[in-house]
Image (cartoon, rainbow, N blue to C red; front, side, top):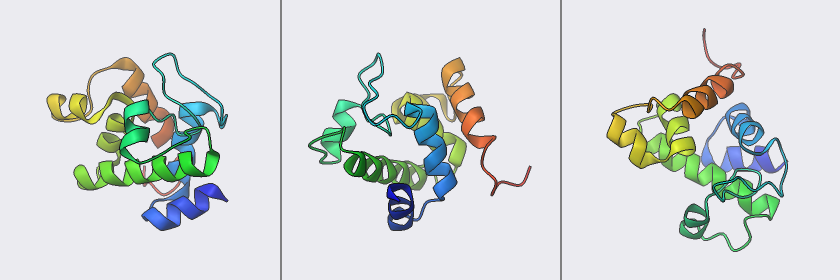
Length: 123
């Protein structure tokens, strides 16, 4: 599967990557957000360009780029999953400015939804 390959390549948990995809696009490869994010992993145009993606609606390219971006964020935030998810949703600038997860209701709910479905976390 695309998720399995991207997860293995980037050293990510498949459930985490799948959770982002579910939350971002509802698994719809042609999804476009009101803010312009595209595809399964809802890449913003600037992020897609930065990651060298020619066609953000190509499922394999989109999942690969989303996994690479998530890996970059996890590295940036020393493996802190909530902060990385917050940056995936709201952008690293907002996470950095807040010194953690920004108090944006959409972002807080986004993180809660994904984290609540991760079986590898001890609760």
